[in-house]
Image (cartoon, rainbow, N blue to C red; front, side):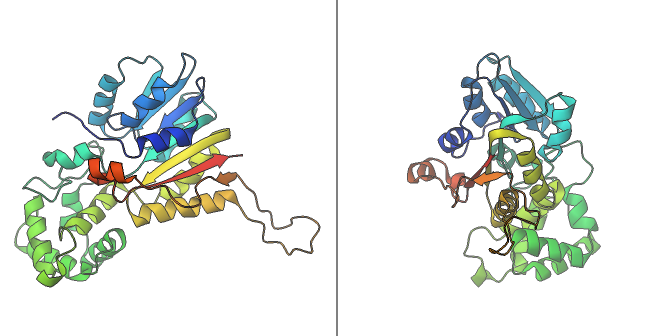
Length: 309
């Protein structure tokens, strides 16, 4: 299957990065290189684009999509390791970073990856297929309480306890190995009257995917590290797709901005507050009406921008 991923808020991201032709830019979620291609078009021969992705299939597709550009460095890694990646490339600071979080259209549509709750496929959900932890391991080996907690926390699923209980009962009889098996368990765990808000398995699948790929725990620190890796005037653009991601990004931005809490009558700051820059977007940017009509997956997207100063 061809790696396709329609970039969300492409124009807004490119404008938000304020690209310098000779600058160094990082796409920490390279995917099919939809955003990166527009960044590369705006760079001179002196500019550098660093594309990072933990999905080897994404990197393969990106190389093909960016074959006309010779100043791209491809890195099979996780954007959580940005500082180490830059050190390995002998790059201290960059002019801009883009993070388009969550799962790609390709990963959802390529059913054998196990991200989708449609059809019947092996439970997997790994973005990086070289890692050991899979959705099968989470579903079949996690204790009931741990399962319930992660489904509630990462999926914001109100019926998490019942879903976890039914998963554990089912796996006593036989292993849960396919997406269809899991969907059937979830469907019987949620009252029919409460299954009107989208597919009943959506939130649980999101939660398991987040757990498998460790998407939330490191995110706050990843945002702070990304800001530290920016040159003065450099910008960080982050697209989120659900409240947990957005909250982590928002809070990291607020801390990076810094705020003096000293009493007003003191002649100088003694609280040690340090600012790394400014939040450019007081409110997150959302997709336009036109984009929503063309790309339904932009519905929940939010873009937040920070500038290092």
